[in-house]
Length: 127
Image (cartoon, rainbow, N blue to C red; front, side, top):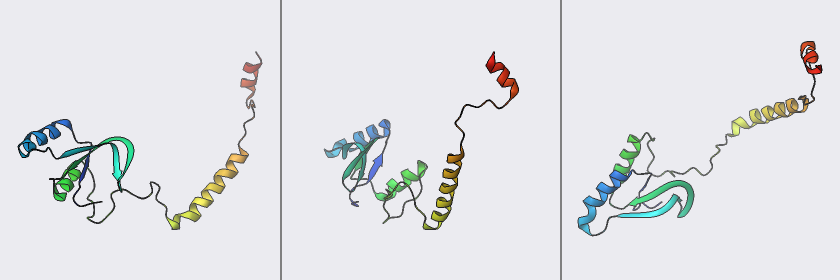
């Protein structure tokens, strides 16, 4: 991810309008709408969000806005997008395997037959 480009997703319309009005004197509005999605390594992912690129916004301001919106602080050199949506822990694998084996055993023992267990229900069913 280039340091020259900062991404702010899902910005509200009044803020964008104020930014455009304040920056109109310079000739360019500084906003490039990339489309719907998130940019990761130059590729677009469609997720229902609009992505806006602000060249004149410092990384410190972006960090402050994200913190105000309830996000967590990001490290300067870290990748904001995880490589996998499912975190894997090597220490947790034996526990997961044992859990899956128990689930499979219980699934084999499930009774899907239609069986009436109580005599009252049997009488009602026979009426």
